[in-house]
Length: 451
Ligand SMILES: Cc1ncc(COP(=O)(O)O)c(C=O)c1O
Image 1: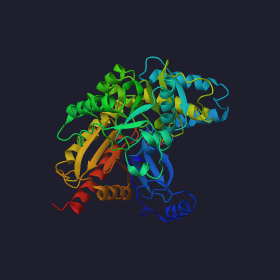
Image 2: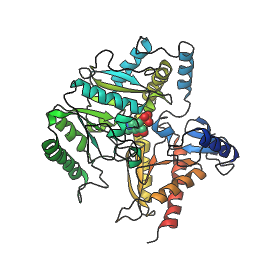
Image 3: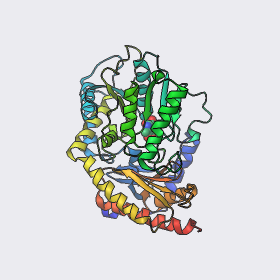
Image 4: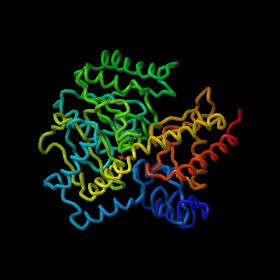
């Protein structure tokens, strides 16, 4: 089956896809991003089939969700079996053993030595909960949260307020949550402090937080938490310099400020470790997860230090968090990740993919930067390497063209191609997908480069 993929039998969007898109535009609010007109009919492994019979290689994983691939048989079987027992009964008011088992598993695989979990339905809800837990821990005496420019944490009010990756996410919706301060993020390719690179850039950010924000704007004793993605996702797949997270952790500890680490996108083996913070030996006080956790079913969680997970009775809950069907899928996801040692696979295939993409650098002048960890890889496109002007329309063209050739890949940040295939992807399919991307990037370079 895999050798026939990709297979474009009718140029997308085909007739059935066009019909569904028209109906969608008529009945669904169109506030989405949507890069190209894919209308999915089914998925298996790392392959997606559309409603007109076209087959694509999936480098999106339903946006870093399907780490174990589409419709993994173990997930399907576990979900079916739970469906026959009970589908819902809220943890807000009642108990079930499935939740206890899942919480224990989650704490065990997390980088926290000892902790408790709280289940949510999505990434944004995990962030909302983390912020409430952090402020609640200090009983409202520390109103400030320090977040980072370029961050994306979700689209509800608290998560939107700590986000700062694209103005469109926030425009129209003010007033946002008060008490949020944004610090620069040490983007090694575009350091906010001119002329600095690598750890010097990370150190400049730490000094800025310490010498300016915590010295001139707010006293550290007013700050409940730092919140950050260990690798920025939606902001452009940006990996910070190696020293940054450990130094931020040290600074946080010095002032009893909590570290909320958002691993909604990086979690569950995506970056070559079960959680990305493990690359830097950092132990968060609160860890927000979702996306890959439910194998495609809606599920998220906050895992936190036992003493920090202390909101009193009645102060926080939800109807669906820890839904037993989603938790059944989660139990399968963890088993698959462990049995197939998917963090190792992500690391190996990620290194191979980065080598392949870096080799293209000399041939494809559009490529400004290739970066990532494991199978979370960004290829930033620039109009020219000196000015580093983002190649925005070129990115849109590359994504659409890849789609028409049978490769599903989307963007991140202003002009970055984001590569996040299922961690179980067959090497043959990964290679085919990379070859399509290489052809398209070469074509785009010829088409758009004037110098
Ligand atoms: C790092 C990060 N945090 C939070 C979110 C929000 O997750 P959700 O879309 O499930 O609300 C996302 C979604 O892309 C994300 O990448």
